[in-house]
Image (tube, rainbow, N blue to C red; front, side):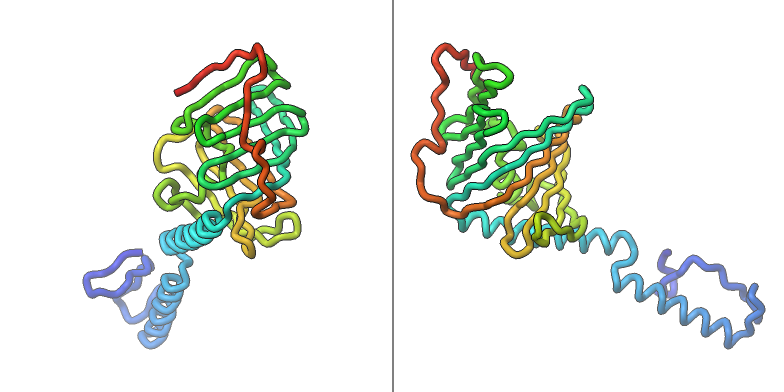
Length: 254
């Protein structure tokens, strides 16, 4: 479809210059068909049927959902939830299931403590980001500065702080999840990141991310689903603390 020199939208249909068209319509009949085609094209343009208009609408709706969730996120001092995680590793042909408790508090405290496998944890104490997986290697602890902490864990902070500046967003669909109505959003990093893409399920009523599916650079896919969300839980001084066990090797990443 293109715009003609006369300023009318060209539908791409060839119209013969003789008094009868290919369908045998006379002048008045052809005029009616022409009017009808222009009406169809106009309706498609206004209704967002064509991809460009639809894409803009998807991006705008996705950004609105994420910004509203960001306002909600910043209004909550802390929250805890039960998480269930699925890690698909195509390179090994393996799928791993785990669960535990996830907690977060402003400004940048974060903790995932696994009950299965028991003892595994990821903790941001405000100064360092700790990763300890005793189920895999009880003698090794990873310590990151907060500036270079690994991505894909604290997805509430990652996706809800300035989402329009960091991601290409698009609205996917409405989908029920655990009895809640959610808006599903696709997010792809604008700048190089530790993951390639993500899909987020945002609770429409509470504006909270209930599920995140994150495609990592190595091809693995992490899906984290939250349930039993508790807003502003009672304070626990040990919730965001971690001390490496005696004898463990601490590997620093700055």
